[in-house]
Structure formats: structure tokens, C-alpha cells
Figure: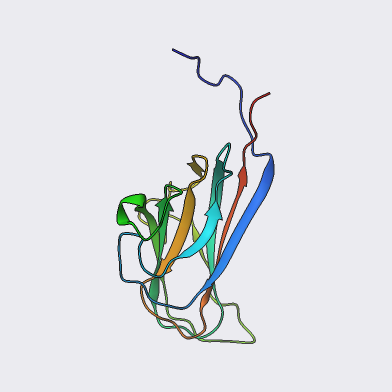
Length: 151
């Protein structure tokens, strides 16, 4: 049996991915209208520290769902699993007050506040969906990094 890592490993470079979401997807299997927000390094994998959803104006209430994909076709349900979800409250556009940002992990917005950081195998991806169609949209951003091979 090979020895486990005995030294701490760190990401070699930051990786940030984002999409603007407006369209509903009621599928709970990661198929349908999905938005790619993070891709792990194809050789060494990656780590996602957090995901942030910022409303871009007036929206009805919805839910943000995050799916892990194994790097294969996301239209095949067997390649995806729902990993986290967070309630998105209705928002009203304002030029004098900040709109509520939802950030995962956050024990107040998701049942499992320990969902992140998330270490992904090489080539795995994260996709995001909304439960209802919204008018202005949400800017959904994943922040993490990629690993380098041991030398």
C-alpha cells in the first residue's frame, strides 16, 4: 500500500469561473439548462473554496442548485449528482442599498455548512441551476484553485 501524503498540499494557481443565470431548470439530476461554473485541472484536479450568487436586480425567489459532474456529458443524469443548494430570496433593485448576496458555504443558507471547500478529481466540473426563471438574473461565481503534480 502506498503511503498517504505526509505534507500539506496547496493550489498552484487560482481558478475562478462564473455565469449569469436567469432560466429555470426543475431537473434535480443535473440535466437540462445548466451553467458550467468550475472545471478542475484535467491532470491534477482542483479545489473549490466557495460559490457566490449575486442578484443583478429585481428577481422572484428561487433556489440555486450546484451539481458535481464527472467530466463527462452533463445531459446524462448518471454523470451528475446534486451537491449543494441554497435559497435565493426575492430581490428588488436598488441604487442605494446592496442586494443580499448568497455565499456557499454558509450554514444559514444551506443545510450542510461543511459543503466547501470541495476537492474535485481531475477534469470534474461544477454546474449551477436555478429553480425558477428570474428577470434580472444572478451572477454565480465559483472561487478555487488547481493543483500541480508532485515533482
